[in-house]
Length: 341
Image 1 (cartoon, rainbow, N blue to C red):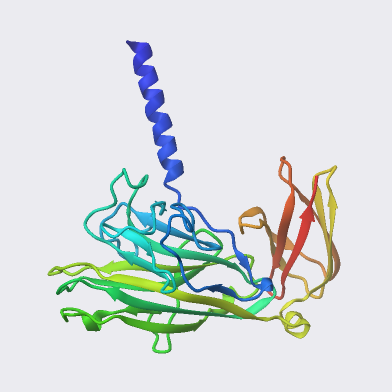
Image 2 (image 1 turned 60 degrees about the horizontal axis):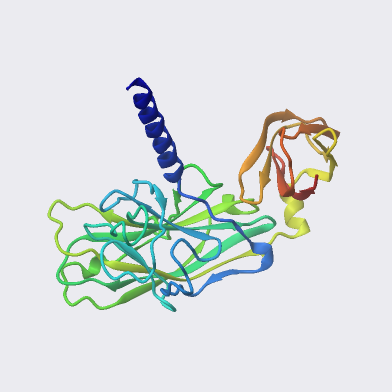
C-alpha cells in the first residue's frame, strides 16, 4: 500500500511538471530586418497548407483558459488547434483577409485539439540590429458580429524588448494607446464590416536591438450589462521595415571603437578588446539567435583607451551565431560572432 501511494505521488509530480512545462507560451524566432522588410499578407485556413500547431513566419499565437480575457490577463499556452473551425473560441485563417480572432463561452472540444483555450494574441519577433525608425503597418478590422451585442473587444498593439517582462503600450498622436476599437458599432445591427489601417513608428528604444517582440492582443473590456455575441476581429497586411543606421549615426551614439572579439574554444573564453573614449560603466550581454540572454555582466568599469575583457563561456558546447551587446552612458555597441566547437 505504501509503495502504491509513493507511485501515485510520483505520477502526480510528473504530471504537474509536464503541465508547468506546457503552460509556458513559446517565443518565435526573430526576423532580421537586414533581410529586408517583414511582410505577412494572409493566412490560409486549410489544414493541408497550415496544419494545427504551425504559425506564420516569425510569429506565434497564444491562448488562455480564462473566458473573456482582459488586457492584463496573460496568455498561458500556444494555440494548437486548426484554423478552419467555425464554432467556439477560435483563431481562423482568413486567406487574403489575414487572421481572425473570436471568443465564445466555450473552448474547442478536446477531440478537436489538445489543450484548447480562449484567444488570444499574435506575437511577432523582429531583430533590428543596425536599424532605426522601425515602422510597423497593419490593418485591423471587424469581420462579423452576429445579432445585437454590447460586448466590447479591442485589439491592442504593444511591444517589449526581449522575450520576457511586460508588454508596453504605444501612444498615438492623441496620447491614447494604439488599438483597434469597434465601439461605434455596439448595439447597432446589422453590423457592417469595418477595418482601419495603422501606421506606427516604434519608440526609439526599439532601434538597434537583438530582439523586439510585437503583440496584437484581442481582449475584452468588461461591462456589467454585457450581453450578446462576441465580435470576430482580424489583423491583416502586416509590414515592418526600418532605416539602416549609417556610420555617422552609429558614431553619434557609439563611443566604443576598434572593437574586436577573439574566441578561445580550448579555454572556453571570449576576449573582448575595444578602445573607449570615456571612463564609464558598461553592461554587457551575450545573446543567442532567439534573443535569449545567456551571459550577463553588469557594471564593468572601462578605462580611457584600450580595454580587454575575458568572458567565460558556460560549461557546455557552444555552437552557432551569437550577438554581443555593450551598453553604457556613452556607448551602444552590437556585434555578431560565430562559435564552432
